[in-house]
Every structure is written in C-alpha cells, then in structure tokens.
Length: 410
Image (cartoon, rainbow, N blue to C red; front, top):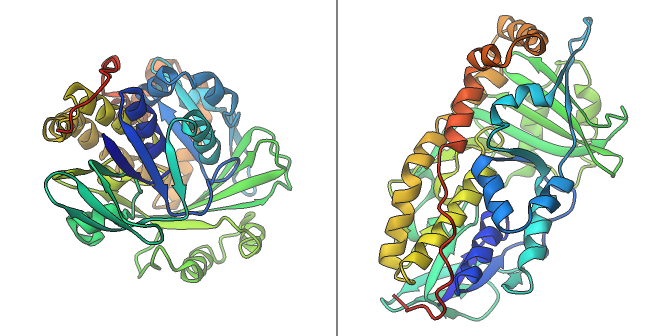
C-alpha cells in the first residue's frame, strides 16, 4: 500500500519507519526545502512510552548521546542569591519510565537518518488538494504532479494543511490556553555549560540554556497576554508583541531582545490545543499535533506524537491494511491517552508562569526546598509533576505487530 505522510517533523518519520517495518510503502512530503535538523529548534522531552518507541527502533543510544546535558536549573532573582537544583530532582517522577531531553533538530536528524534509505522523502512541496474516490486518494501538490495514494496521513503539525483540507478551518478545533511561546538563538555570553537559567516575573518567564557544542544558547519566552495576538505567520507582529510584553522587565531581558532581529530561527506561537472528536475521515487520518496537539512547549507534544505514530502503524498492520478497521483501532487505542495529555498543558502553564509576585516568590521557595525533601514528599508537593507523569506515561504499548508481507488494499 502506498501511504502519503505530510510532514517530516517527528511524527512523520516515526510513522514512516514503522509503516515500512510492516510492509507499507510510505512517502513523506515536507514543505520546507530541506530538513530542519542539527542543533535547531527548542529542546523537547521524550517520556516513558516515547523512549520505548525509539528504543524499539534501535535509536535510543543515539538519542541519549545527543541529549542536551542541561543538568542543573538555576532560578535567578535580581538582588538575591540564585537557587540551583539538579534536573534529576525535578524529573525524579519520570525515572521509572525514562526521560530524555533533546534538541528537536537533533531528534529530527536521527529519525531522518534512520529512515532515508527506506522511505521516499520529497522536500520543498506540500499537499494542495485531496480528492477521495473510494479506492484511493488523488493528491494535488503545490509544485509536483498529482499522484494517487491508498492512504493519506497528516503529520504536519499544529497548523496542519491536511486537517484544513479534510476537516475544515483550524478555528473549529483550536483552543488557546492563554499563553504564548517565543524561542530564538542568542550568543552564549554567560558560558552556561549545562546550566539552564530561568527568570520569572508575573505572567512572564524567560529560560536560557546552552546548545551543546555551538557556543550559542536558546532563549525561551513564555508569557500571558490578554490583548490581540499576532497571527502565527506574522513574524514582525510577533516580535513587536514580544518586545511590548517584556518591556521594562529588567534582568537580562533587554540584552536578549537585542539579539532578536539577528536571530534567523525565531519561532513564536500561541500555546494552543487541538481538540477533535475524530481524526479520521475516509482514507485520511491525522497523527501528532495535527490531530491532538496537547500544547506547544508545555504539553509533551513530542512524546504524544511519537506514541501516536507507533500505534497508528501497528493498528494498520494488525488490520492487514484495512483502513476502516486500522484507523478505528488507532483512535480507540489513543483516545484516553490523548484526553489525559490535554490536562498537562493547563496545569504546567498555571504553575510555570506565575500570575503574581506572591506566586513567583512561592515557586522560588519551593525550588530551594525540594532537594532537601524525601522523594515521596516531593511528589506530593509537585502536583503538576504527578499529572504530567500520569498523562504522558499512562499508556501501555503492545509489542510491534510482526511484518505480514503483502498487505491487502483494504
């Protein structure tokens, strides 16, 4: 069966790997002219079941080798002594299921290199039209000639074009959580060397961490904003909003914002969930952020995307390529997990971006206290961590279905 995957981020290559493993013929189309790999992008987390997925792909050693190694969090408070805490203390709740932090571009590189010899990749193009006639899907592209595929899968992220074509405008499914994210690269003038520095003010947080081996650092801004937000494609408007919201904050913010126009990797978006009753229509389905984004930067989307890709490929294989049964089984297997993941983002946003000076002070006090407490007490205090662990590790993955050779066309 010929399967088109739109999107070469994380979900797309993971899905392509497992589809090929099960005997399908995947093609991945990606809008960008080349793979965005290497040290680009924000640091992302792989929790329990996602670690299992990359381990079953034989990629866990490479992923662990490429981890960020940002092992100490430093909470800075102008005029007061910084608070330092090992990341392992904050992530103790994930120890049993595994946890790896890795720059998104490094993860994309590892996944691409693991699949490029067995999967057809088409860069610099995108899906323009989709027409299903019952037996297959006629796909029109923005640049290349039209082609027919047995199945089409949207793995093209929060602002999915496949979702828009098949299910309608994004506004029907997007639920803004009240926060915004901005990320860009700055020089590592501080020599951070494995130390992640954070600064908080009411409704605003800045995180600065090194990008290993580059002499650069990533600046991450999380904030709440009640006024009109710039469109995700309006880069100038997004930069203006960021400068406006953080005006007068102090600390190192003026220096960081001074690097804004020089950065060629600026990314900003509203922290938004995608909520859909179904991710499937006919021979088309969605995976990862395209179908059930739990919220960028705070919701564990990379983990959910990797798990969703693995489950989708496995259920299609178990159904011998019958997309009716395979897609239905995929949605059944993922429904509770997706629902649980939606609870993570609001909880993390609520505690990680404090609303008041009192909340900022409380977070600093708690951070200073944590290393001295027994692990069970830490877990009781870190209610968000418990929800995160339950939401993102609360799925049991079946062993991969064995390849069945020739698959029916469903």
